[in-house]
Length: 169
Image 1 (tube, rainbow, N blue to C red):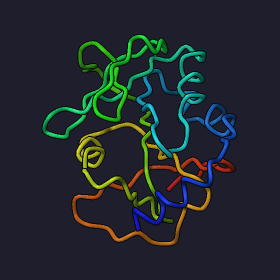
Image 2: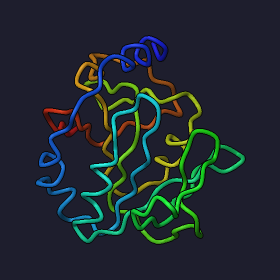
Image 3: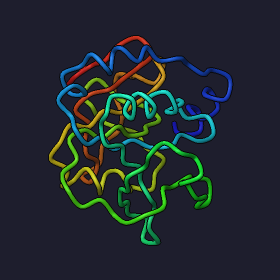
Image 4: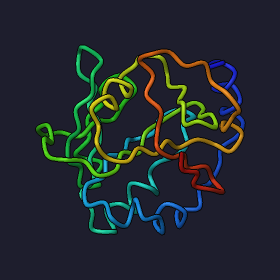
């Protein structure tokens, strides 16, 4: 399933209606938002991250630790303050340890119950286990599917953003 979605993404990139996110209560009420730097064929997060900064909110990006867990760090939007860790661009600096209101996360697919198909490393599932805020996954329209196999360690998201809609679960 993962390879099929990755293959489809190579030929189909979507453009997101950012007002769907910007006009949502989840975004308006958030002061601290964790997002990510997309890479490869992932839906592009550059505009989303710019929106977060321009809205005066604190933007955090993940850093992948050696044990494959994530920590979030503040990013000011300047590419010079990112370093390459494998394929990922991560912010320099120390771990952010206060509350995160909204987390925008990558996914390969989301089903109608908020179950998320990730890359397979479990990093976001481990992060979501103790996360108290709202989680929104970003996918292309065709990646919103009927059902995804779910295991005990899989944590559903609260909402999904596609190019044309924001769906809450």
